[in-house]
Image (tube, rainbow over all chains, first blue to last red; front, side, top):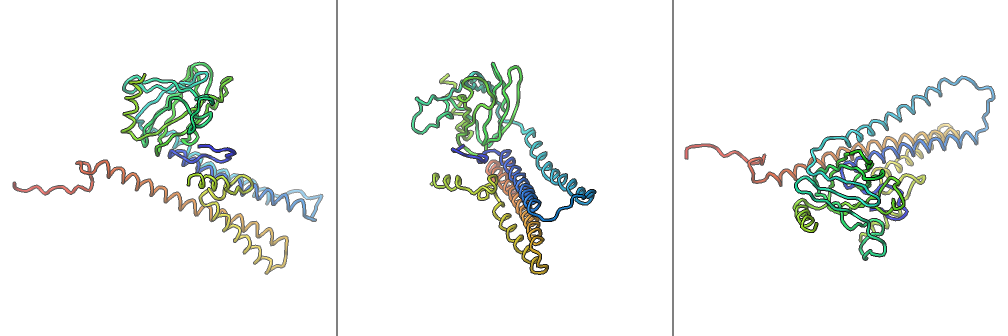
Length: 230
Length: 115
């Protein structure tokens, strides 16, 4: 999960996020080299003694600095489009979870077999127990099985919210009157956190998303126990 | 143990404030190769021409080309490795799933003969 003063991406927990990190590193290296080149060019331009106030017409260098950026952009666009289309692949989800944003909590519905619905409120700071994370932990988590494609249908009840879990590479707006769909696969068990990513009122910062991934055999036990509780 | 690893990650050196050299695969090797290529190219050019400024330019060009070349070669190798890893993982998962069932591809068909 995130740590204080973090600047980079979180470690990936889904194949799509792994690809996104690869693309990010690729583009960052290109950006770094271009920045270094610009910095060096400025340095040499500022320190040179060569000046020509009458210089016009420089077809050679103009051709180079037109074609080179075009090639660089193609080099960035190709992996970008690859990841973009990969994110839209149909992957025959095993489970559908409906996520509804409210002011200021999330509710989850598992309606594939029986009607399991529950709300997920942030645990207030004064009620935290020692192992829980401030502003991240919730009373009920969205539980999903590992290694299974999950479809998430997202909407909102009142104003626009946005559900985001960075480690899974998931971010989708929850818009009232609209149903958005995203899919993800969680590669390994664990608890993953995210926060509402669209300003939605006074407690926008206090409606986190907590996803817990567990093996399928335990998922069935969990859903049975939740149905009994609710 | 987990705490020490996290501390090491937090202290990762960020080149120009953006690229985390320690934690980005291939970054460290690419930059070191680039530095080496730059030094060799610049030095050789200076030894031949004795022109300082031009040698710096050649060294810089050497840095860019060597870094890019090393980066793309390493990333391509890594990408091929990841594809192989995924195929192996899929194969292991399928083997566990299908072992002992009629769908197991390693099951040799029993020869049919007179009972």
